[in-house]
Amino acid sequence: MLEIIIISIIQGITEFIPVSSSSHLIIVSKLFNYSSSILLDVSVHIGSFIAVIIYFRKDLVDFFKEKKLFILFIIASLPVILIGYILISFDLTSDLRTLEIIGWTTILFGIFLYISDNSKQKKNFIKNFKITAALQIGIAQCLSLVPGVSRSGIVITACRFLKFSRIDSAKISFLLSIPTLFIISCYGFFEILRNENSILMDINFIAMIFSFCFSLIAIKYFLIFLKNFSLLFFVIYRIILGIFLLSIVYL
Image 1 (cartoon, rainbow, N blue to C red):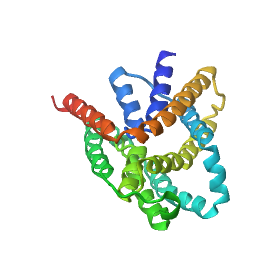
Image 2 (cartoon, rainbow, N blue to C red):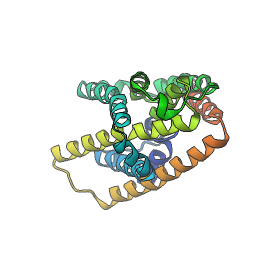
Image 3 (cartoon, rainbow, N blue to C red):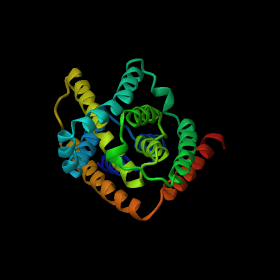
Image 4 (cartoon, rainbow, N blue to C red):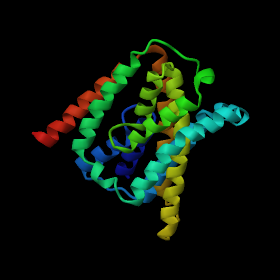
């Protein structure tokens, strides 16, 4: 039970901040020999999915009314869904899940995050989120398929390079997580049904609840944090974590 709760909390906290939830789950699994399952993975992602839907419910209603903006977010989501499908279909992801790769990507993309966050110009989100921006952000998001890059981190980095404010960059990242989390949840359920294991056990329901609660907390306080501070804290954290992981690998 403790293992399930820890994994759920890690997923909830790290899914929406620029530190890579997948890398943290891999690190914890490797260092503490935790096991995982499709059912558990689906449960924690559903928790995060429900959290972002509830938190941004008003924004989503506006999106459905603003069809052009809605279509642009779908376009921005397509590249990572397509590339992700290819990687999974050909089983190309397992070789990327090493502490060495996570260590290097954590540091490298932490540096990119720092450089992008020094952008001074601030573009209006509604007026400047156009097809070119959607495609650039969508292509950048594909890099998050490599553990350690961070989906949230690379989207915020791309948005900051495109001169969007920190708050708007975070909101774009949150909203872009919805299609991705939805696809992950659907894929997970498909795998469960294919393996004739469609019953959500109580323990997985608990995992979903913990992931949901901590995802809500992470979204709320990350936005509050960005109103008052830069992303330097996360950059420093990534570099320290990356050095720690590389020391394990090389020393």
